[in-house]
Image 1 (cartoon, rainbow, N blue to C red):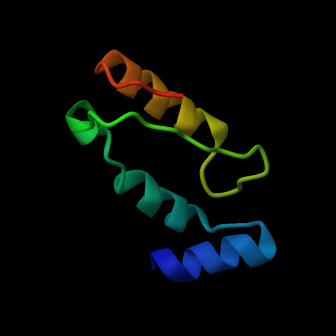
Image 2: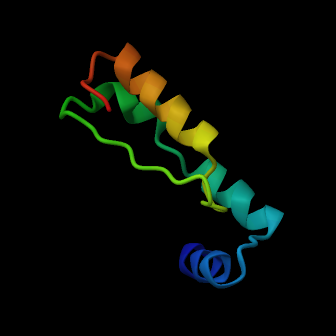
Image 3: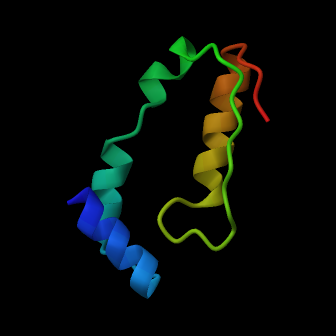
Length: 70
């Protein structure tokens, strides 16, 4: 489901709520503390699949875990 949802999102700019729910369930938040390599997050304002708020949450969690993050 991930690839078709991604293709649909890229081509139409829209994703079904059920696909968004799936992506949300596949997050790696419980493993952020294990990331120790310096991390660069790149997020665009026109991204219809993952909003800026997701990158912000990831950045805050990485910084809180002590990971160098930009």
